Image 1 (cartoon, rainbow over the protein chains, first blue to last red):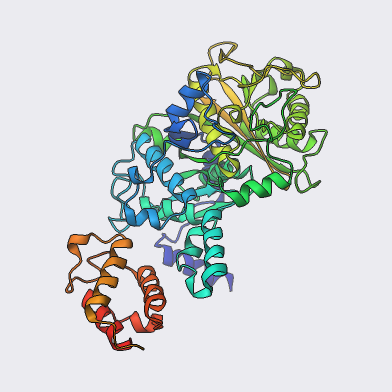
Image 2 (cartoon, rainbow over the protein chains, first blue to last red):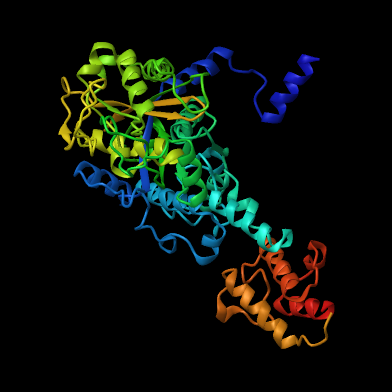
Length: 444
Length: 81
């Protein structure tokens, strides 16, 4: 009996008998859908150091964080961010995420970040009701070091030696869970796992949560900590890792990616709410597009069509024309296959404009951070746009005749922006399995 | 189980374990509650494992459910070894 259900629902919600016409609700939804989503805080831990600005400043200055063929976060000390108890309750990928989120929330002006758990998850310094703040953290692998330690204990000392902490530390959602508990975030929280596109997909998810009204703010990013023998051997067996240990995207001598570790977290809020609380915006997450190659477990579609579809979708979602794009932060892994397919994809998606737009790869400075890459590169892109520069592709000195875009070799360069408007960029992320995710970002 | 294990030895094992779990050393007394020490069910699962490895005694979740203080834990383990 629909009538009974309807009146019951109204009574339960405490609504007056006269309900608003459906058009008012859909108009509200449409307004929310159209409202810009601002980035109000960023945090990162990368091989270039601790801090989002450190990443931006060092990469822009041409500093490379890769040592001995890997991008390790050698400056990161978990004790700077976690108590001894918190640290042993977190795999390294979670520790990195906690550090990045702590910086991001402070950067957004969310007072008392870090008090959530100790305050029993109550509001504390959060600017929204906790139940209205979501959390999405991407990871490609999750707690692989914890998994291997558990396997070692099982093999050497038997099943009774496997730690009760093994499952809660290795699970891929441990990062999202830790951020939710640490900061008292009680809206939807979960992990996204699409290999090397995880971080970008997490931000895309966050954008949709804000546009749909599922949350008023989302703390989102990506994290990865896979610098250990099993991951090295496994990626090595795929011929994906660089035997030379040099990350030189788009160079003729590129021979695979250099593995890195790290995390980045962004705080996202709708413009109206952010302005109402006097927040400073670093930029706007203008759009998100995703596609799948449906082609191969590890190789991209050679013609770049799958990746181009995600780029076009991001442009359409942002309401931006190809010729308005001022910079492309490439996936640029330094593998022979990716850099060729991605160059084709950029040409397919941007047409003639592809030859004019600067394209560079953060991975030339920090290596490939796998599930963290999309989030770290979104942060790097946003801060570069604010400074109106295209950071460089490092290590690119021998051009590949097949790859003929402007890859900003060697040194950063000012962006050429036509007229008084904010700069726009695309940030590409493509994962094993053929998952493509592209973000359209606008700098403040 | 061997009767050679003394309560002092058990206390030493428990205190060392609690420190490993992140409890503040100066707060660990026999009267201290696990709540005060921020010791939770995951820590007690680890403690059960350490006890098993050290003395071959199995403590199940239901065994440690009523354990509220450091003293409770020491007594429970002493009863079983």
